[in-house]
Image 1 (cartoon, rainbow, N blue to C red):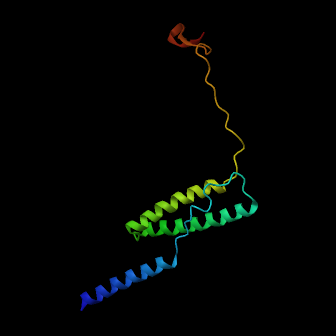
Image 2 (tube, rainbow, N blue to C red):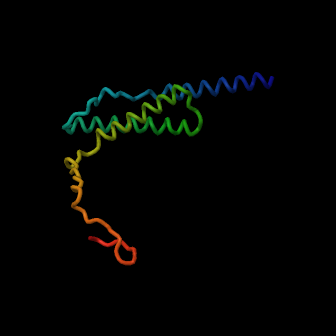
Image 3 (tube, rainbow, N blue to C red):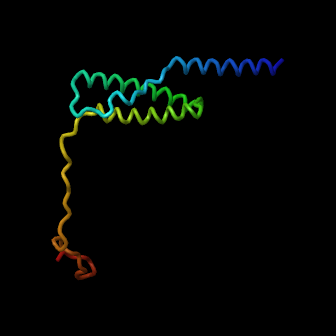
Length: 126
């Protein structure tokens, strides 16, 4: 009798888990903003932000399930894909950069002072 009750409990638990996962459809649609436009209109920016928020919510839910130990191998792949898409959408919706990063040009050899041992063994600038 205990074996039957245990089996029914396990089956019921899996059914509840599968039902809960079925209610949360996968929101990933990497094709929506791929490639990201260089100049986004206010409407594009609003759509991208709404999509980013959906992806962030899905990521949070999957990470919570992972912390609880509820993810199957296929769910772990979804978690990886969701993390990747969340990072991409964070880049798409981030404010544009101020401009190119200045390049640092190293000095020519021989233009820097050399350190040579001076009196007392301490280096001195020459």
